[in-house]
Length: 136
Image 1 (cartoon, rainbow, N blue to C red):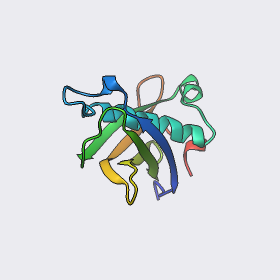
Image 2: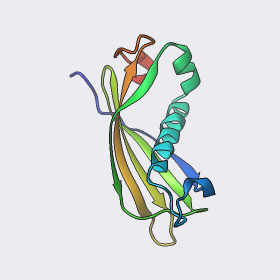
Image 3: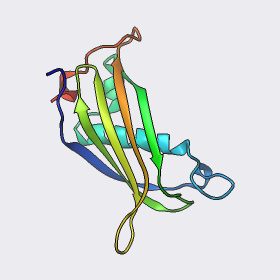
Image 4: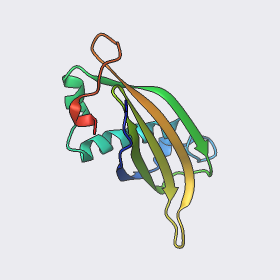
């Protein structure tokens, strides 16, 4: 099989900063992409690797596809929880899913869900196989 489903995830807190909001004090829709990037970087760190070292080895990860569903608004100073998971790892691609929630007394409120497909490229800008440590 060319790829494999794996169960790797990381959860990080996200505090909404003022400059991430729009005129209504709500997180601007484009800011969520930055949150997802933070989630991927921290997930890699949780796996024992740094993105800095990954790039120093001549690799880069680029977003090939992204799908986002907005469920509720997040606002300035909200403390949110971002779960980032690896859903699939292939030879050159990784599929992630994201769930951003606002913790509550009874139940967390769902803010955003998303999925990305990330591709690995080499210094020449062409698709290349992921390093072994990034594949199951």
